[in-house]
Image 1: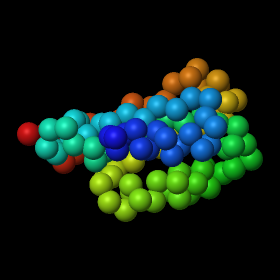
Image 2: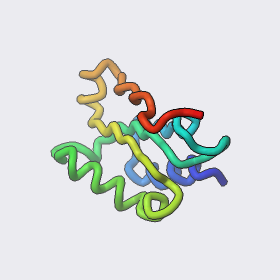
Image 3: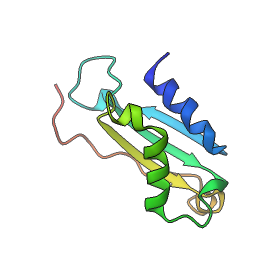
Image 4: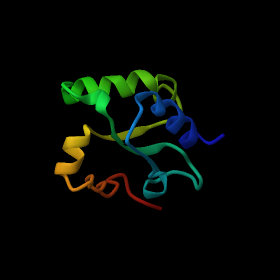
Length: 102
């Protein structure tokens, strides 16, 4: 099972309306087929009345094993369904890697 699949499976605990886990490792100076840099877009009712830092802490807790090992970077875009609709169901693009590409 890929690391991306493991992350997706763990995040289903939040009963997401939208869940996108994107492997962005190819955008960084890492070996081919790496699983080190990810972006998560997650929309869930479970984020209602929760400040952004608490949302992030919830994800950190669910992905503690991955963040303690193979995952080097995790971008998180976490919304309630209302926030997601207000954003026209769009999340920010990731910036270019500042560490340089091969």
